[in-house]
Image (cartoon, rainbow, N blue to C red; front, top):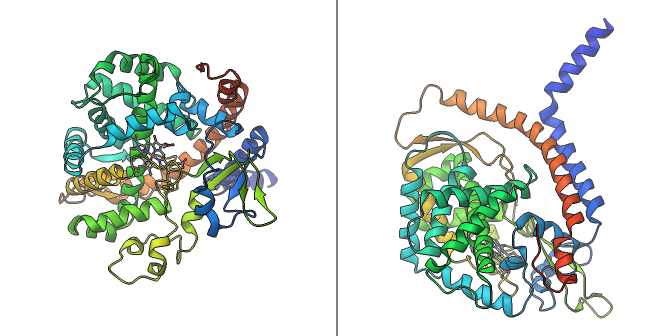
Length: 453
Ligand code: HEM
């Protein structure tokens, strides 16, 4: 009798794993992360800086340090290697930063109609044959690999280059989410290819860099950040459309304005940055008695900021961004807590103009081709890569459609159990390994010598 009860309890424990294990593993990961990394960092918003001063402190001239002096930087440098010391996002202010930022602006400065045309071409090349069960992030990678390649080289992306770019971007984002380890050979192959292709870049590259450094710059900004961010952002947008049939139907028939609102609301609820950190280069006075001292690490929390000041902030409601209709959130339309591309005064995303245009056109084209459905979990970090069912638009739903959606939900729950364990082990290992390698700390200690990975 006792063994029967014990057996039944064991079966219940196993069957209920998806409901309790992933949450506990996430909590444990956070504890491991804090233990290895130390508890540096002032959370903003937090006790010291409330949400009402978030923007002001983020925009303060002394909130400009990027990498030097933050243990957290060792982690990002590790994940973004090779060449984190050339990645625009992680460079300190100075001549090198200015040269790199100028080159990025040049490559990204595409007239709207050309950007729209380029996006349409890339969708046509990469998405025609997609159907059935897909992972949206994987589906999007070839599209944005081709897009970035044409931005940089002004010509169609060869197959071999596309594979190298996807291999690199996938490796970075998989490691960033703790779902896999780094494979530096995949990344190095892209660096070698880019070094070969430098004479074909259509815009001026940053001056004062060696050929290898220029290749690493391109790799960081365009074949890592651009491809990863656009793929993630589109995966979120398509997940939202897949899970809100009313929004999907309206997006199909309304003009571009409605899709722009859907994009804004998607990036409000699912900002690509969880936390952006800055190291203060001087004191930031808060009141007559208090100041944030120089050398502090400020951790700006995007999801928290994006929830503050909105009515029912967890609800998906593109109407918040429709300023022609009345909505309770409009009172503060100019001051909406919405900074999906960062703050203008402190190193905002250089693609803040181009990315939403490209996303809107890609979504229009995809909605013309497919109906989207998904029953998988949609979280900000999207570790499941956005499982989704694509059916050719206007094709009748097959008899297996509902069964497939049930299968997606079931598989997603169980994958979550396995994945959370993988993330715990691999994530902890990488945090430890990054602290051991100290790529950022060594770079500044050794006066800017290139870092190996
Ligand atoms: C929807 C897509 C994207 C979103 C939501 C996004 C978001 C952001 C955000 C929030 C920041 C500022 C973070 C901070 O304050 O530290 C940033 C910085 C940056 N982004 Fe994006 N990004 C996107 C696409 C792109 C693309 C397509 C590129 C192409 C090159 C790009 C390149 C960069 C770079 C280089 C920086 C660093 C800027 C600097 O420090 O000077 N991003 N992005």
